[in-house]
Image (cartoon, rainbow over all chains, first blue to last red; front, side):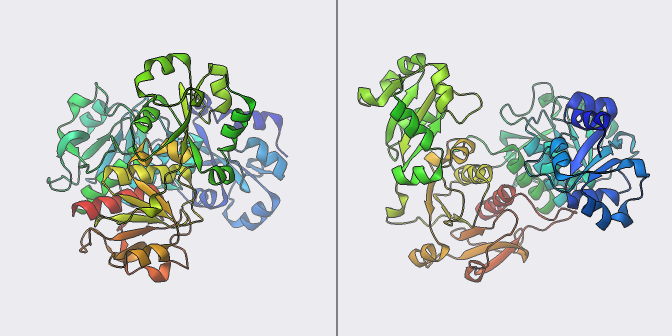
Length: 248
Length: 248
């Protein structure tokens, strides 16, 4: 049974303000929650699940009894952000990747004011696919722990470390990283030599790279167009850019 | 003023069955509707717009008076599929690209059971960016004239010709086209030579290429992964594949 105070607490985590206050977020679904329980970087606070799920996954559930909540489908529906709730919902503590001492030499992304949670989740999935260790995002981007970001990342948030902060700060910490930005007038990404340990700035869906961050870009690159479209979707552009940096 | 019968007709076009019956679809927004009115391939049936929009765009509106409907914001909201309706909605006849005599030598896509309208719209936008003349889709894919496809294509449906049909039929019409399919075990797309006039089959979001179409694929290709993600989003994968075919 879910107490009223817990119901209220879990529902509050769908709102950014309360996620930041409690430093906790929600994650749903059988597959992702199982992966979460086996991941050292994440501390699970509460598991709310159907009786069958709790029984089947007992070996994974190394949590005090009061952190395991058994509920029925109607109750799960009440706290779920999904149209079709999926057996289990976990409340998880946000990890603090900001304190990690060093960034490997591998490619990293900086998202400059990305607003669409589906795009951000898809970008985390791209970073995961190409083995990028970090994705940074500007403070005005959607937060990494928005339920739609978590859901559309398909588990990528478990492997790609995400940190929100200003581009300038990140550049100060890693001054050896070359900063790339994508723009219509940049150099052809298919023919220009690229530094595979760089930091790529991905601009906002409609506006591109912000006025305050554009002067920090050290090299402009572009995906050459052969048709009539004015732009590519931000996640699609990120996929093509990452593919080029990792494979050319 | 919008008559009740017209209101009912326009609302019905949000449903696939009625779109196919009437061979008409809905398109919304100032920018796209203006482009539509100047595009020879599309016949506009009805324009429903706010008074200011009708006045400003009079030179473009080469339509009989009874096909121009002036309405207020409340009425527009009633027929709109958008959260924030945008000045104008057009009812448009579906063009029949199936009759086009020849397919240029350029690269084409075949979407095998793509279900998410946002993915299909984004794929049309990718095809437009890379100058692909045609996108084909299997009969069980979402239809090209779904309002969310139209909206997320950002006008690409005006330039990329879309045809729904079986892969076999398309191959019979264009037997010289080499058929590619993407799969984890395919040849590395970054190093394997690619035929830039081929036909690329893009699989379903969860299941990949269908059992019935897989035997028709003549060459398997893959985007090499270096990380933990199991897959890329279908539109992102399409973007990377098209970029490679057009630029390597």
